Every structure is written in structure tokens, then in C-alpha cells.
Image (cartoon, rainbow, N blue to C red; front, side, top):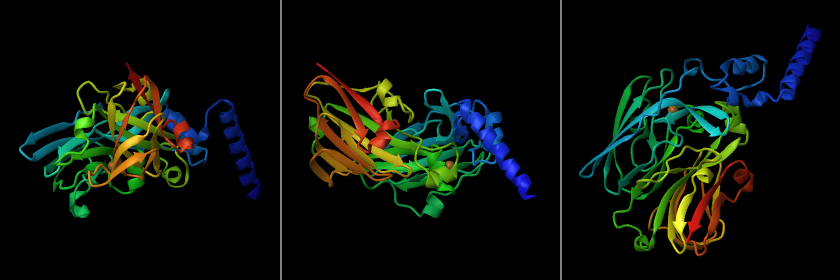
Length: 346
Ligand SMILES: [Cu+2]
């Protein structure tokens, strides 16, 4: 018996070595997750902890459904979906993401301090429940952030009484799987009286940082290191790009400014696990509002620490024409993708 087990291990090791030699990374099944689920099954059968696409998600790629946002006085009605959509998170690497509205991070929501937010959640996932936990509100989590079963609707209402740049995410168990598979996003609650520097700002953008792990691999999400750490930008104003969190998103479509512009970035680090040390190369952040609350006003910061889920409003002036990268100054993460570009022209 022991001999047979030993032989089995040899055969498996040889198989894994052969796969490595062919350039197929056994620990990287997500690269085939959507394009080649057969191969994923094969590596899973090889006894490794290879990531798997759950059965009902195989071959499923739901077209992104645009978010609907309507305002009636101070009531804001938001219609969102939870759905399974393929996202190319680095060139050639498709990830069958669990998403809000087919985007990861999910669509940007912008409301004002004092609004009441009404969220309708349409769970298009045929297999598992999802939910939405918004850091911008006060509610009993058991009811406000309750699960919505597959193919069902949920409706939730909350007052939004605190300004900030908040994270939202799916809170269904296991939360780490849901967030790391793509179910995160940002809601900005604009302060009733604005920021003291509102009149100085020429350009404003939204930037989000998130991590990706091996496909749907809770063990890697829990004990491993991220495979990619990425930035995305969401359109705050008409004509601005709206991207997913990919290794190239904010390099291919840089943010833009003119010489002398004061640029404001609403930033949030949705994690799920890592801290961001947000830094813009070639400038100093004159004004920073931690978590996007005007009461938390800091001056002259080189780097802003964003805990997982933490946000900020950062403002800086770009005094010469050029290409200004921004990074998380944790350079192992910058190297894995978390670099963006601001193009400054005369
Ligand atoms: Cu979920």
C-alpha cells in the first residue's frame, strides 16, 4: 500500500513537472479558468489545491448590466446586479469574476451627505447568494446587508449621514472569497458643505486599488500573497474612463492634467487584505482628507496610508509637463501592477 502511494506521488510529481516544463503553471489555473475549464479540472484532479470554477459558473459569462441611479429629492434609488462576468485582469489572463454589474471593482456610486440610499439588488448568479455591505451607512448588518438568494431580488434602504470615500462589498460567507473574486466597489458621500479646497481643484478623478489571488482559491486568499495588485479608475465626470482593476488599466488610459492644475483623487483601497501606501511620484500632496471627511484635513503628505477598505481625498499640483506615475509605495505591489499614470501637458 505504502509502495503504491509512493509510486502515485512520483507519477503526480512527474506530471506536475511536465506541466511546468510546458509552461502550464499548476498553481495558476485561473489563467485557464474561463477559456479552458477542462485543464482546470485536470490540474484539480492531480491532487493539487488548484483553483476551480464552481460547476454552475462554468461557461457562464454574463454581459455587464449598467447600474441605474435615479434621484428624487434626497432619495437616491440604485439598481445593481450581482453576476458572473469574465474580466481580463492582465493581458491574456481571463478571470471569471464574481461582480457587481459585471465590473470589478463594481460601479461607482456618488451621493450626498443627508441622502437616503435605496438599493435594489438583483442576484443573477444561478448558484450562490450575494449581498451588499456599504461602509457609508448605519444599519443592523443582519437585515441591511442580508443575503439575496440566487435569481432573487433584495431591497434595502439606508440614511447616508457621514461624508467619505467608502468601500462597499459583498458580505456573504465566506466574505474573503466574495471580495477577492471581485465583489467590491466605492461609494462617495459628498460633504454637505464641501471641502475647504473645492474652489482650487481643476481636475478630479477616482482611483481604486484591489488585489487578485489564484482563482477562487480561499487558501491562497487566506495564506498566500496577491498575484496581482492593481488600480482602476471610475468615471466621476462625463468623458472619463471607466475601467476594471487590471494590471494595465490606468497605464493604458492615463489620467490627464495641465501644467499648474490642482488634481484631486478620490481613492479607496478595497483590499481585501493589503494596505496601500499611496504616493504620487514627482509631487507632494498639499491637502489630504483621510477617509474623505473634511474634518480629517492633513497638509503636505508624501504618502497616504490606506488600510484595507480605507479611503481618502488627496490633492496635489503638477508644476511641470511630464508623465507622473502613482503607486502604492509597497513596491512589491507596485511591481505586481499597482502603478498608474497622470499625463501632464502644457
Ligand atoms: Cu457575493
